[in-house]
Image 1 (spheres, rainbow, N blue to C red):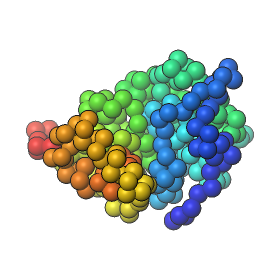
Image 2: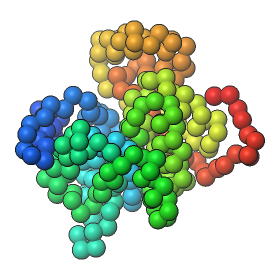
Image 3: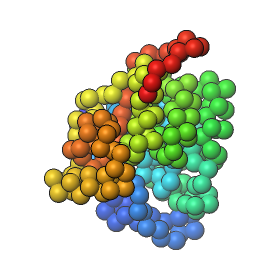
Image 4: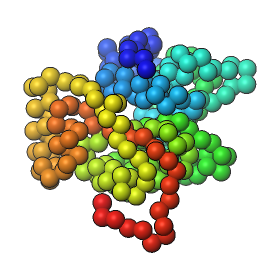
Length: 257
């Protein structure tokens, strides 16, 4: 597995300046995005899954999409003649809230031929992909963070994720996300990838400050085993799971989660 990643010039500039231009050329401040460490971990996930096709929910400013498209480019799976789509990004707010900023930077980076933006909510767009028979090797879920939307996102992604594939969740320090993790681990055949989760992304002081901030916002995290096991030593809320096999429980199956 490759351990190091040199970001393309567009992605590197965004990490350095935290600024981006929208489709009209107006500069926008990027206040919420994956970190450089998270981008590197997602890249390792991409490689480990031997990814041919990837998908993400939540395009926003296009940072993770740039990362996935760069990974496809480096894997030399670009076909500019037949325009084979390698990465799908779902976001109903790209044209409105983000003024097509992600579309601009993806085109600027030279990835117009290998990504496709699906301009609608994930619960409407993914079923279309299911109908087409699309299968993906890895997925990144960073959409609406409530329990119901995150669970629906996972449920649908599971339908198109190949066995042996990976799915990553952002902001896993939220209890809604952790509740979905509990569901996945009790109702589907997934496991947390300890190798990919073995990373650090902040100093002791940064981690301590973020820990206090999280507990202040939600004291119930003190009773979350996810929080103690996976967020105690890092700032990131990235959680990565591997799909061990396709599995559907019996129609009357239930286990507390």
